[in-house]
Image (cartoon, rainbow, N blue to C red; front, side, top):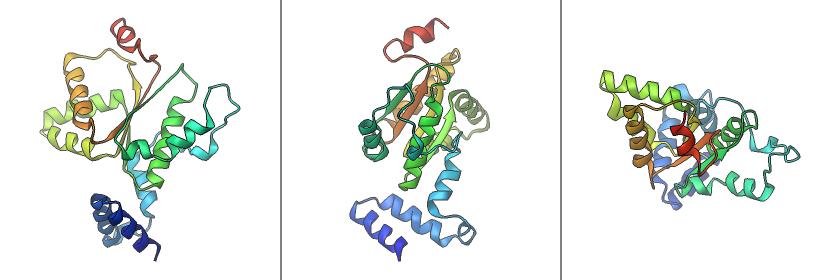
Length: 194
């Protein structure tokens, strides 16, 4: 059985948490309508249905096939490394982030896509209703957290503190993909000038 092979491989890789999650998913009768990867994709709430296989390398974005193949392996996620995608409006940052999220789901990794303004709203509500610790735990347990529209709005002191908590909690434990119009290296200065 294919699922049993997957479980055996997960055990060999010492990915017991993923193994337990897969077994738990198989035991729930209402989840049999969707395959495991499809449930991961649904839970990820990706903004667009993008796929790595559909990347147009002829578009003048400067994407390198070899670099994208390396990212598509998702080893960087398994190593809890981070990724930043920057560029001007309309160059495909969100699409590319969602394609990498889709690829991660197809490899059995958990993904969560959030626009930064939506993350701030969820954190604000969580502070108010007492669910902050639970939300932070959910974000921590996600293999890949995609934060889109980074730096698009002025950040309050509380939002900045919350964002640093999210990033600090995930450091070395989970991967974060940031998609932003702010160029790397000058992002902080540009954000301060907004």
